Length: 370
Image: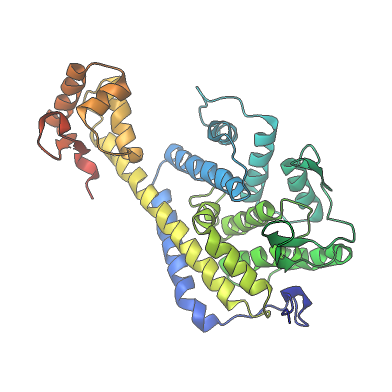
């Protein structure tokens, strides 16, 4: 016999959890959150914006990728950069759809203190589906789903489908969403990070739209996390971490949405994933801080354009090992010129040789050694 779905429980929406099992993990998340925000506070406005740009680009790309949609990274970067007032030279014009997706994310995080309303959700939904279609199929846009057909999450080949979850009937969705929005906009005395986790699950359980529920769920999550951080930008990406842990994400959701209204296991999974997202971003921000200090300390060191370009690449995450052959290829110059460029930076104390061996010698940033 199939267990009741969470919304069929008599205590639906009266979610409970074991604070004792979560308190240590929540404290860790709050500690890491404070550290990354402290790091960002120590940076100049321009570097804050540039770091936030990188994170928000990744967030938009990965949230779409979770749904199997691959956006053009340069167009996403161009759109977000324009909104942040960052130079977009060399980037393509964003298309109408990309601009709509970006505006949804920016509205959520920049206006995180504004009430979440039916109209605001409908506006987000319309931006995600400007043609009124999901792939080849027409869907209800800027309104909650209608119709007698059950909204199901299924997998498997036709005729062998496995139903992982069935959402509430469409006729009860408006009432359920009224209750959800009252809770979102109210004060419950709950930690804001836990509130983001509960909201994520609650919205997924209702599944109020024909399509786009996952992306809007993550948008609501980003909105509440931005409110929890007290920052209008994002410095870590929950969507990117969910994509990395996608199998565990769906398993956690399936387990809790077919269980009781005790959601401790879901909150534990959410907090662990959020901790991973913040830790990953903390390393990135620390690198940005070190990079900023590097250029301050080396502002009197003369470098040509090729040297500046590759030094920046080394700071931003160079793939593989830097050799003179790679330098020549990246810089579109001769091997002899590459060797002169590298030798000059070694002499100035910017690079060090990691291994000896002629052309196979690879070079590292002296100031970026772990």
